[in-house]
Length: 179
Image 1 (cartoon, rainbow, N blue to C red):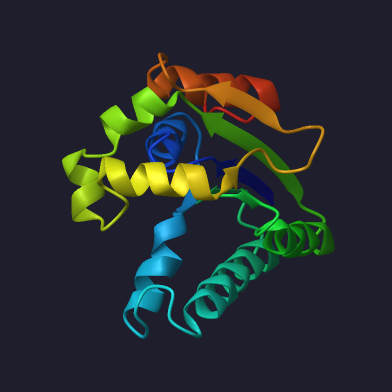
Image 2: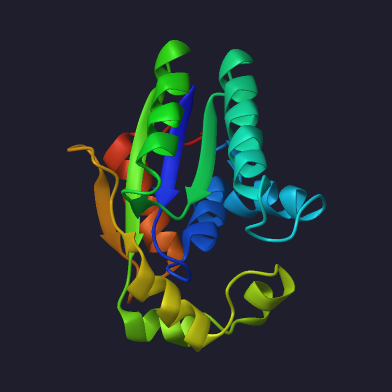
Protein backbone atom coordinates (compact mmCIF):
# COMPACT_ATOMS: atom_id res chain seq x y z
CA UNK A 1 0.00 0.00 0.00
CA UNK A 2 1.06 3.54 -0.74
CA UNK A 3 -0.19 6.20 1.67
CA UNK A 4 -0.21 9.66 0.16
CA UNK A 5 -0.18 11.92 3.23
CA UNK A 6 -1.45 15.35 2.13
CA UNK A 7 -1.01 17.79 4.97
CA UNK A 8 -1.06 21.50 5.60
CA UNK A 9 -3.01 24.27 7.26
CA UNK A 10 -6.76 24.68 6.87
CA UNK A 11 -7.87 26.08 3.49
CA UNK A 12 -4.67 25.24 1.56
CA UNK A 13 -6.60 22.85 -0.71
CA UNK A 14 -5.84 19.41 0.71
CA UNK A 15 -9.20 17.85 -0.10
CA UNK A 16 -9.46 19.64 -3.45
CA UNK A 17 -6.01 18.38 -4.48
CA UNK A 18 -6.83 14.87 -3.19
CA UNK A 19 -9.96 14.72 -5.33
CA UNK A 20 -8.10 16.06 -8.37
CA UNK A 21 -5.37 13.46 -7.87
CA UNK A 22 -7.91 10.64 -7.64
CA UNK A 23 -9.35 11.73 -10.99
CA UNK A 24 -5.89 11.00 -12.46
CA UNK A 25 -4.92 7.80 -10.62
CA UNK A 26 -7.05 5.10 -9.01
CA UNK A 27 -7.13 5.11 -5.23
CA UNK A 28 -9.22 5.69 -2.14
CA UNK A 29 -9.72 8.86 -0.10
CA UNK A 30 -9.59 8.98 3.70
CA UNK A 31 -10.56 12.58 4.39
CA UNK A 32 -9.33 14.02 7.66
CA UNK A 33 -12.86 15.15 8.50
CA UNK A 34 -14.43 11.69 8.23
CA UNK A 35 -12.98 10.73 11.63
CA UNK A 36 -13.80 14.16 13.06
CA UNK A 37 -17.40 13.95 11.82
CA UNK A 38 -17.76 10.51 13.43
CA UNK A 39 -16.35 11.76 16.74
CA UNK A 40 -18.81 14.67 16.64
CA UNK A 41 -21.66 12.16 16.79
CA UNK A 42 -20.38 11.08 20.21
CA UNK A 43 -18.63 14.14 21.68
CA UNK A 44 -18.60 17.91 21.45
CA UNK A 45 -15.56 19.15 19.51
CA UNK A 46 -12.49 18.96 21.76
CA UNK A 47 -14.32 17.39 24.72
CA UNK A 48 -12.48 14.75 26.77
CA UNK A 49 -12.31 11.62 24.60
CA UNK A 50 -12.90 13.48 21.32
CA UNK A 51 -9.34 13.47 19.94
CA UNK A 52 -8.64 9.97 21.25
CA UNK A 53 -11.60 8.70 19.23
CA UNK A 54 -10.49 10.64 16.14
CA UNK A 55 -6.99 9.14 16.36
CA UNK A 56 -8.33 5.62 17.02
CA UNK A 57 -10.62 5.82 13.97
CA UNK A 58 -7.80 7.05 11.74
CA UNK A 59 -5.38 4.33 12.91
CA UNK A 60 -8.02 1.65 12.54
CA UNK A 61 -8.96 2.75 9.01
CA UNK A 62 -5.33 3.01 7.96
CA UNK A 63 -4.54 -0.40 9.43
CA UNK A 64 -7.50 -1.97 7.61
CA UNK A 65 -6.44 -0.39 4.31
CA UNK A 66 -2.87 -1.63 4.75
CA UNK A 67 -3.93 -5.11 5.86
CA UNK A 68 -6.23 -5.49 2.86
CA UNK A 69 -3.63 -4.07 0.49
CA UNK A 70 -5.44 -1.02 -0.78
CA UNK A 71 -2.97 0.01 -3.51
CA UNK A 72 -3.22 3.79 -2.93
CA UNK A 73 -4.81 5.58 -0.01
CA UNK A 74 -4.85 9.37 -0.05
CA UNK A 75 -5.37 11.00 3.32
CA UNK A 76 -5.61 14.61 4.41
CA UNK A 77 -4.28 15.94 7.71
CA UNK A 78 -3.59 19.24 9.48
CA UNK A 79 -0.17 18.43 10.93
CA UNK A 80 0.98 20.68 13.80
CA UNK A 81 4.48 20.43 15.25
CA UNK A 82 5.06 19.17 17.92
CA UNK A 83 1.45 18.29 18.87
CA UNK A 84 0.93 15.73 16.08
CA UNK A 85 4.41 14.18 16.05
CA UNK A 86 3.20 11.12 17.99
CA UNK A 87 0.19 10.65 15.68
CA UNK A 88 2.41 10.88 12.62
CA UNK A 89 4.78 8.34 14.21
CA UNK A 90 1.83 5.99 14.69
CA UNK A 91 0.88 6.41 11.03
CA UNK A 92 4.47 5.72 9.91
CA UNK A 93 4.57 2.61 12.11
CA UNK A 94 1.36 1.20 10.62
CA UNK A 95 2.60 1.77 7.06
CA UNK A 96 6.03 0.23 7.83
CA UNK A 97 4.53 -2.77 9.63
CA UNK A 98 2.56 -3.60 6.49
CA UNK A 99 5.58 -2.94 4.24
CA UNK A 100 3.84 0.01 2.69
CA UNK A 101 5.22 3.28 1.42
CA UNK A 102 4.53 6.66 3.00
CA UNK A 103 4.47 9.56 0.52
CA UNK A 104 4.34 12.85 2.47
CA UNK A 105 3.19 16.02 0.70
CA UNK A 106 3.04 19.39 2.43
CA UNK A 107 0.63 21.82 0.78
CA UNK A 108 0.87 25.49 1.64
CA UNK A 109 -0.26 28.88 0.41
CA UNK A 110 -0.15 32.48 1.57
CA UNK A 111 -2.28 33.62 4.48
CA UNK A 112 -4.10 35.94 2.10
CA UNK A 113 -5.01 33.05 -0.20
CA UNK A 114 -6.16 30.90 2.76
CA UNK A 115 -8.34 33.78 3.94
CA UNK A 116 -9.84 34.08 0.46
CA UNK A 117 -10.68 30.34 0.41
CA UNK A 118 -11.86 29.85 3.98
CA UNK A 119 -15.42 31.07 3.42
CA UNK A 120 -16.12 28.76 0.48
CA UNK A 121 -19.64 27.28 0.76
CA UNK A 122 -18.28 23.71 0.67
CA UNK A 123 -16.19 24.43 3.79
CA UNK A 124 -19.27 25.78 5.56
CA UNK A 125 -21.39 22.77 4.53
CA UNK A 126 -18.73 20.33 5.75
CA UNK A 127 -18.41 22.11 9.14
CA UNK A 128 -14.77 23.03 8.53
CA UNK A 129 -13.13 26.24 9.68
CA UNK A 130 -15.01 28.81 7.63
CA UNK A 131 -14.32 32.21 9.16
CA UNK A 132 -11.23 34.31 8.65
CA UNK A 133 -11.03 35.09 12.35
CA UNK A 134 -11.05 31.40 13.31
CA UNK A 135 -8.50 30.58 10.61
CA UNK A 136 -6.11 33.30 11.79
CA UNK A 137 -6.38 32.05 15.40
CA UNK A 138 -5.42 28.54 14.24
CA UNK A 139 -2.57 29.78 12.05
CA UNK A 140 -1.18 31.86 14.92
CA UNK A 141 -1.72 29.16 17.56
CA UNK A 142 -0.14 26.16 15.80
CA UNK A 143 3.02 25.49 13.84
CA UNK A 144 1.28 23.95 10.80
CA UNK A 145 4.39 22.77 9.02
CA UNK A 146 5.76 19.88 7.00
CA UNK A 147 6.21 16.51 8.71
CA UNK A 148 9.77 15.81 9.84
CA UNK A 149 10.79 13.76 6.80
CA UNK A 150 13.53 14.69 4.35
CA UNK A 151 11.51 13.16 1.50
CA UNK A 152 8.47 15.38 2.08
CA UNK A 153 7.35 17.06 -1.15
CA UNK A 154 6.42 20.72 -0.58
CA UNK A 155 4.02 22.42 -2.97
CA UNK A 156 2.58 25.94 -2.98
CA UNK A 157 -1.11 25.90 -3.93
CA UNK A 158 -1.45 29.70 -4.06
CA UNK A 159 -1.57 30.09 -7.81
CA UNK A 160 -1.70 26.57 -9.25
CA UNK A 161 -5.06 24.91 -9.90
CA UNK A 162 -5.60 21.67 -7.97
CA UNK A 163 -5.19 19.63 -11.17
CA UNK A 164 -1.68 21.03 -11.72
CA UNK A 165 -0.68 20.32 -8.12
CA UNK A 166 -2.12 16.80 -8.39
CA UNK A 167 -0.16 16.17 -11.60
CA UNK A 168 3.07 17.30 -9.90
CA UNK A 169 2.43 14.79 -7.10
CA UNK A 170 1.71 11.98 -9.57
CA UNK A 171 4.93 12.73 -11.50
CA UNK A 172 7.09 13.19 -8.40
CA UNK A 173 6.11 9.84 -6.87
CA UNK A 174 5.68 7.97 -10.17
CA UNK A 175 2.11 7.00 -9.35
CA UNK A 176 0.52 4.67 -11.85
CA UNK A 177 -1.80 6.34 -14.31
CA UNK A 178 -4.25 3.92 -15.98
CA UNK A 179 -3.80 3.47 -19.72
